[in-house]
Image 1 (cartoon, rainbow, N blue to C red):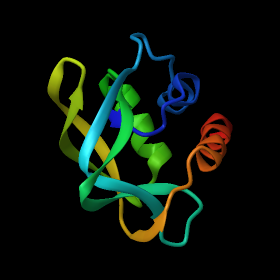
Image 2 (image 1 turned 180 degrees about the vertical axis):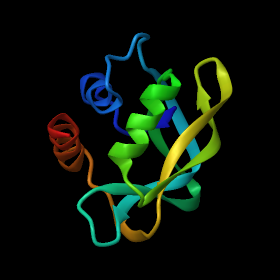
Image 3 (image 1 turned 120 degrees about the horizontal axis):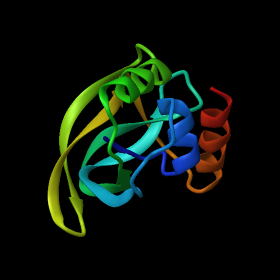
Image 4 (image 1 turned 180 degrees about the horizontal axis):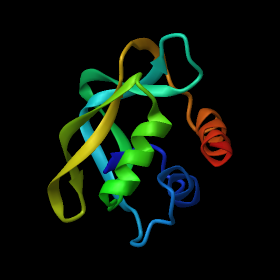
Length: 120
């Protein structure tokens, strides 16, 4: 699972159990993190010359189902390839249904996402 929610505690809370292995830093080329239309949280939008930093975390089927519930029907799972220190690896990422062109402001917006994930 690749994601931009890089707080392991928040991610584990949303997934229903703590993440067993340490998150691995990863980068998704060809995308930018932007706001989802009509929402206060992000999604990814194609941006050929950009990339998005995130992490890869191992999840089981139950955790993936809980993450889908957290993401809601507005997000769909998509197979991607991300770059890590050990090379390109396959992963699954959630993409929102209606990306805007409004950039996600790091780190202020990331703090809000950590708080949101812990309240789920």
